[in-house]
Amino acid sequence: MGQVLFTFSNAGSAAASITDVYFDDGSLLSIASISSSAGVSFTHLANPANLPGGNNASPPFQTTQGFSADSNPSVSQNGVDQSAEFLAITFDLQSGKSFVDVVNNLATGALRIGLHVQAFADGQSESFVNVPVPEPTSLALIGSVLAGLGLVARRRRG
Image (cartoon, rainbow, N blue to C red; front, side):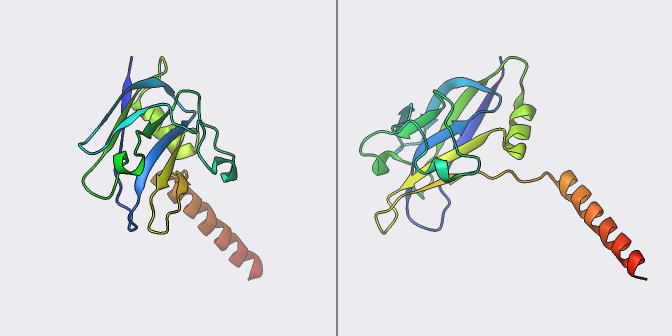
């Protein structure tokens, strides 16, 4: 059975702490292990069970059952802050799936990852969801199509 490792660090410009991590679908089967650097303490299954504010994502973010982890109390002190801290979550993959499938799932949005970040300076929290980014080949194809449409439009005018 294949596995994939997700490593989370906090390189944001605002002081805050990653306190919950959620996964939505993809080629993942189950969480195999959770490990972290000193100062970070996470356990399997986040509370709340779904990403706060995840309903505002399009489509709404729905955590796959069992695909979450959160920091232990005291939440923000055991989360991933802006230092050299990290969180590593290893997943077993579904039968017949590989690392390439996971990368493709991330690129297409078939796998989304949600982060709940707390302890901003104003005392607020925010949730973040990755957005699929077209691969370079797709961008080049889209650019070629748009350029081709531009040439067709010019020829019709002249």
